Length: 102
Image (cartoon, rainbow, N blue to C red; front, side, top):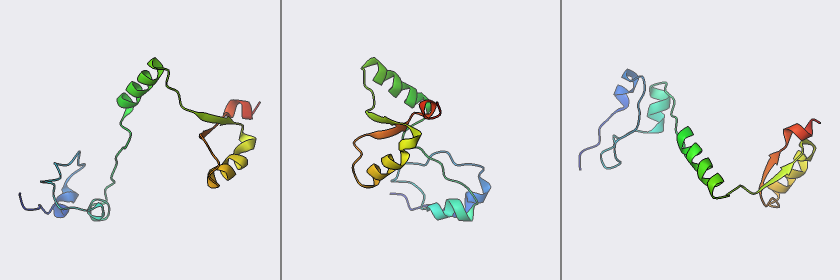
């Protein structure tokens, strides 16, 4: 393969870096190089963007796939937190804000 490329000295020149080459030819760099040496931020997403999220929502509606949640009122947050920290929660807790203030 190709030898690693030292990219850290060039980081201050770029306004942004969008994507990286395949791992086999990727430059030798670290998160430290991005953040501290060049005063830059690293952004990413594990779930995709708006388009992918909308496609997932459309698919779930079309196939009647809905999340299993435990709908709670604001007054029940302490109980929900206790259940979460003690492994007793079966589903994701969702706070019904409208009913909590009625």
